[in-house]
Image (cartoon, rainbow over all chains, first blue to last red):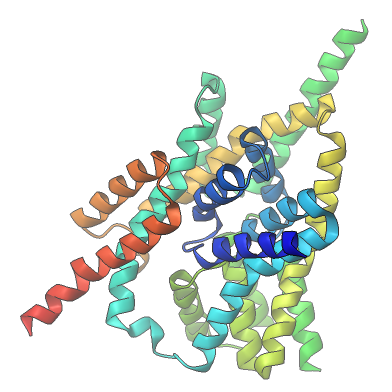
Length: 180
Length: 185
């Protein structure tokens, strides 16, 4: 029971501070799940993000399910998912019930003006870690994808699919070379 | 049967919400405003604003809010459960598949080819926040914003706890943008 509570609590913390969408969570997950708990390895992390992006649904939920399932199977996945979803459920419920004027509160507004640029920094910081030691042409691909998604508005799903197909083709070719 | 309608709508949103976050917005809008007319467009915009101000994925935030508005507490529970269900089931399948095949050459090469795309997608999300479509959603409004940005970037890179950094930047926001207005009065 204790191990499920530990998973739940870790992801509850992650859910509670995921402001500004799932990507800001990457920094928090990196600290909590990799550096503090050692539940997944650093080199596994980019694989995990790849899977979480390939499945539908919020990246926060997908990440929690991956880590929970990897650690303790189905019940682990459920504990982690409950942990990451509960903070937003409770907070939104309270807002829906009590604070209709929440967003017009000047103190809240000021706090968010401070938090928004910090969130952008939390999104960018892990990228610096990922790209360390990466080959230059892969960095060029990453930059091109960023431009295609941001500037041209191309749906990342198609790019992900194309990348998966290219990866499969390369693997198949190498397989043939080995056989010959 | 309002619970069933909520369940089906948010199940759809969970299933087809690829790309996460803001990519899901139009999907949610279509279900909630156009198809079922649970909310007006203005109310929907309010939810987006509230979602930006509260933690958690916008899919969950909107499910809880719309569920509560339409059918009270149990409506919120049903909609939130429905939107989580696809992530739970599909992601468990995908994780199983990965854990079994991760030593496989095809799996490794395919995921490796997807890595730069994922990094590009994260970068694109950051760029969207730095250069938003509309000014009312701007993340950077003055020099203080850039100071907070670079301060947080360096601190996070130096392994300072990101939760602490978020809380600290919120306090800084109140000090910079709210306290001066008190002193003027």
